[in-house]
Length: 81
Image (cartoon, rainbow, N blue to C red; front, side, top):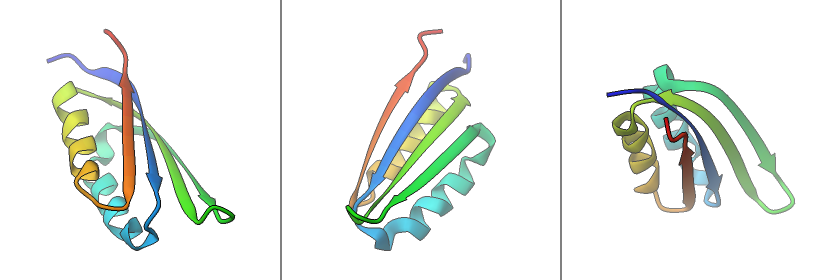
């Protein structure tokens, strides 16, 4: 299966899940090319954007695990090739 490049956006509204999010991101560190995290204190949320390079199965597994956590939103966009 070919690798695809993508962007994953994560908005953490329940800050008690930060440690779990970081653990999942650590598990998939081999497909994460870049990461930017912004604590938006005025709105009491954290926003994380990831650049990923992996198969659709790997990226889907990452977003699937994150999506199972309550208190956060996850969206992804992948290259067509």
